[in-house]
Image 1 (cartoon, helix red, strand yellow):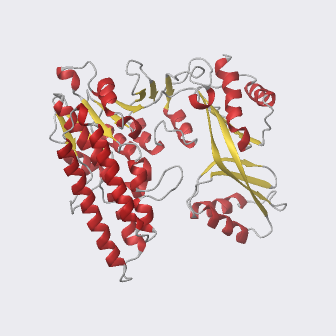
Image 2 (tube, rainbow, N blue to C red):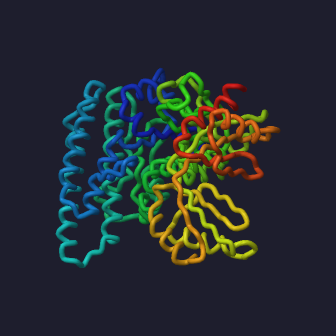
Image 3 (cartoon, one colour):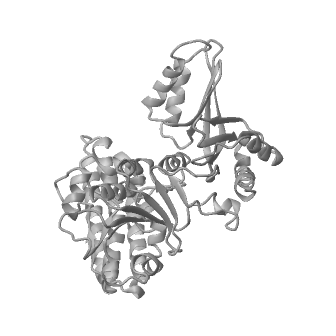
Length: 468
């Protein structure tokens, strides 16, 4: 299992347009042996995982959300999910999907899940089963059906088009044994000759440690990374419905942004910290260590080379590669006049953050104030703040809703850079509340009011991309 092949990951939005995806990416103009030496890792169709778990943006409960609340509406939501899956099946009939076969696959899995969840409801009614015993496994097998559905359909459609596609089901449906992620992948791919078949692999992998438990909704990119490393791929490719650009085209304008072209894994980590979906930071690490580059491509612009993320790339000329940001930031400010010169004050603060598993995105300090900037959606943030109030009784602790706008690049050693950025924001009448930059000069972060989130990105993009 080595060497000439690529491992390619397709997101849910692109999977929902499978006919176009097949014509642009999977088959296109390829024939014969050119169809192979590629492994595709697929996500669930758009919206399905939200129905199964919870809406990623709004938090509206899905099947799991209602089940975890002990709300009987989980059955209604499960039937809604079944209906949506069957609708997807119907939409793919015209491109070769055997709807009867595909519907039977969906119904078998949904029926099995319904029976299992009903049994769990009965068991927990006796009071001997605690939520932490059955909720994590429930979340695992619920999420798995989405990828199983899309992978099964994709392999079936491709076979109708003359491709030797193989459905590789890593979800462990009704398998009693659990292994590591690595063993599960190796067991299912070991006998496949990539030069003669096209594996269509589920983004979900059943494993002893629980892939959802470890990586939550980013698990399909973990699967993509693991397969690339274990099979020694020459390149990993992520197909999205957009290019990785110098800014968000919806905010700045599709005619103003540019495709980045080249960058490195360090910059990919900076983007991940800003909640940009280039690649999950934990997914990229093993590929970086094994020197397997990652290419981000637009699935609907197949002739464009996209953006190559490699280990050692540094822009030969100083430039800004992306303007991005997050509007979901809470500033946790701790002011204490006795802090100055006191050893370990910050350590005690971080102990509370660590206890509640809250990661900060930026941080400012001075003689008597320490401010951490954390994601508003951080679980247990309220509990953490309560503990800080109790532990630091002599301190004044304030929280503010703010935004961060970041200017990122592999080589931004530009004289007068800070002055230009500050002037660009000033011309847009934007007040800088705080700023953060490391000496490595790959990411300068401006903390601003949330109302200025869009206009700040427009101003900085104009200054460092359009005017260049």
